Image (cartoon, rainbow, N blue to C red; front, side):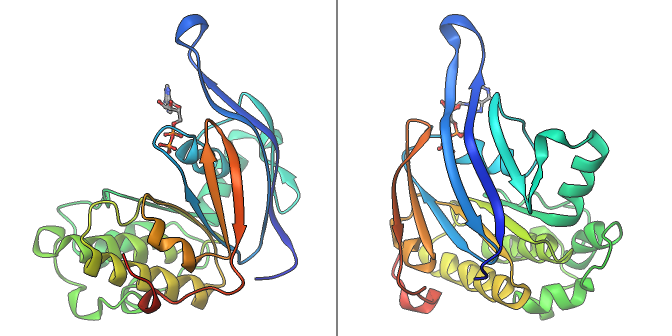
Length: 236
Ligand code: ADP
């Protein structure tokens, strides 16, 4: 982790809907994240974790408050600047892989490397997540854990500054989850990536520098780990 600031979040509020059906997904979140920091977000379903990830990743905009990325307020960016921000700086990994079924593992990664500025070659990204032998397989020929590792390779191939992972192991058994976490850990370390991971698995918390506990649209509690555990040291 470095001393430089990656994100500064101030008074972040997000409301969906109007009147009686209004939902307050975020209620004035304040948060500072350093470059290279690994953060795990825990908390009950509906507490605002995904909403925070989506706003930081430029997929959604807040109702109120500010997000600064390396000092630049996302709210002041044009649509085009925001698209470039997402394209060049951000990698997303979701629970349900989102791979193109008609493309091989390598071709799925190439979808991203073709439009990135300084990408990692697709084969290298797949090697980094332990899938060197699977480059020409189609998603249907891969296990769930392997498909998720393709999704990780795709996200890291553009060398993003930040990786957002929303329940990356949500659909996987514990042995497979550990393999996926290992791939994420290796990739983040290799590329010096800042990482925010939403999970229901309390057992993943030791992998983080900092664990944020969400409740009712805000951070209820924040725990700093003295040192980060390796995936092989945790139990799920
Ligand atoms: P978590 O990730 O902690 O499960 P979310 O950020 O997904 O929580 O959701 C926070 C709240 O915002 C929930 O009450 C959810 O139903 C609501 N919400 C999220 N996205 C939308 C949306 N697009 N439209 C309406 N309500 C939404």
